[in-house]
Image (cartoon, rainbow over all chains, first blue to last red; front, side, top):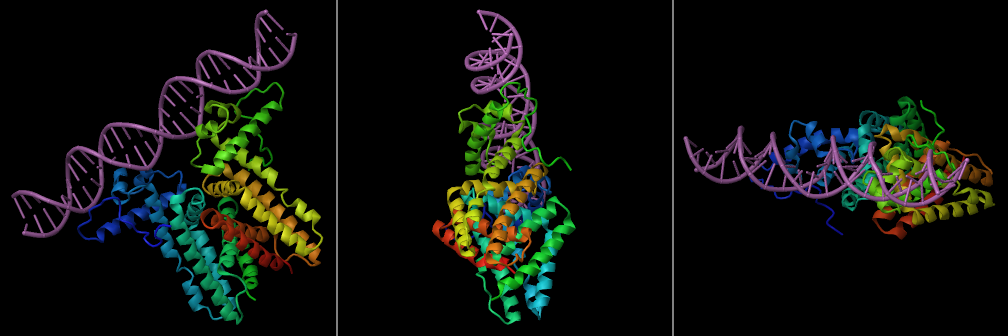
Length: 213
Length: 213
DNA sequence: GCAATCTCTTGACAACTGTCAAGAGACGGC
DNA sequence: GCCGTCTCTTGACAGTTGTCAAGAGATTGC
C-alpha cells in the first residue's frame, strides 16, 4: 500500500526555488480551467491540448505544472472536492429541528445538482474509471471517504435533532443517498430537469427518516 | 425523440441476403468476445483493434458487422444486460417467505458481484459516459429501466410475502439498492473482496425491511 | 462448374494523443 | 546592467485511434 496522504505531489522535477506559492497558485488556476473542460467532455475524451485551448496557456505548459495527465486529473478533482465536503456544514450548524435540517439538506442537494451538474458527472466518471485504472484508486478512495464523512455528519445531526439513534452505518447511509443522487443526476442530464429535482427531494424526504432507529 | 425499440439495427449498408441468422449469430459471437475486452479495459480505453485481437478475427471485420464503435459498444452491453434482467426471477418464484427471498436475493447479489464484476463495472462505465455522450443515452435509459423493473419485481414480491405494501417507489428502491451495489463493487475491486461481500449482505438485509410500509 | 454474393483480411489514411526538448521572454537578485 | 532562474511557447516525436477501400477466400445458387 502506498502512502495515503500526499495528494499534492510536486511535478516531476520542477525546481521551484522562488515564491513557493506562485507555483501552487498557477496550478490551481490551471486546475480550475481544466475542470471546466473535464466537466464538459469527461475524463477520457479530454485531451491536454483541449484543456490548454480553453485556458490562456499553450499545451506545453501542462507538463510544466503536472508530470502527466493522470496527475493533472487527480489534482483537479481532489482540488474541487476539497471545496465541496463542507457544503452541508451550514445546514448542519443552522438547523434546529429535524424538519429544518431535512428541508435545508434537500434544498442544498438540489442546488448543487443544478449548479454543478458537470462537476458531479466528472466525479462519477473518475470514480468509475478507478475500477479499471489502478492509478486513480488512492485518490478516489480518499475522496469517497470524505464524502461519506460529510453525509454522516448530516445524518447523525439529523438523528440528534430527532432525539434518537442512527440505524445505519456511515457506509450504508452514504451508499443509499449517493445512489439516489446519482440517479437524479442522470435523470437531470438526460430528461426533464425539474422532474428529476422534484423526485430527488421527495425521495430524500422519504429516506432520511428510515435512517433512524 | 427517436424510436425506442430498435436495439438491433443492421449495420451501415450490409446487404445480408442469405441466412439472416448467420449474421446476427456472428454479431453476438463478436459481442461476447468484445465484452471480455471491454470488461477488462473499460469503454474509453478499448480500441477496436484490441477487441479484434482478443477475438479470432482481424480488426477490419468489426466494420462489417457494426457501423461504428458506438454501435458495437451499445450492442454489446444491451446484449449482455438482456441476459441479466431475469437473474432474480428464480429467486422471486421459488421463495415462500420474506426471509427466504431476502437470503436468496442477497446470495444472488453476491454471486453476480463475484462472478461478473468486470461486466458490472462496464455497465456503470457506460451509464456514466451517457451523461456526457448523447448517443449512448437512449440505450442506457432503456437498460436502466429494465433493471429498475427487475428490482421492483423482487421488492414487490418481498412485500407480498410479508403481507404488507411497499413504501417506496420503483425508482427509489432501485436507486438505493443500486447505490449499495455500486459501492460494494468499488470496494470489491479496490479492497478486500470478502469484506465487500459481507458488508453488502448486511446492508441489503438491513435495507429491504425499510422498503415496506 | 461458373458466377454472384457473402465474409473476412490487409494495408493504408488522416487525425489525434501524451510527451518532451529546445529555446524565447520575463523577472529577480546583485 | 547582467546573469541565473523561472515561466511559457513552439515544434516535433512516436504511437494509437476510427475508418474505409481494395481485394482475396469461401460459400451458395443455379
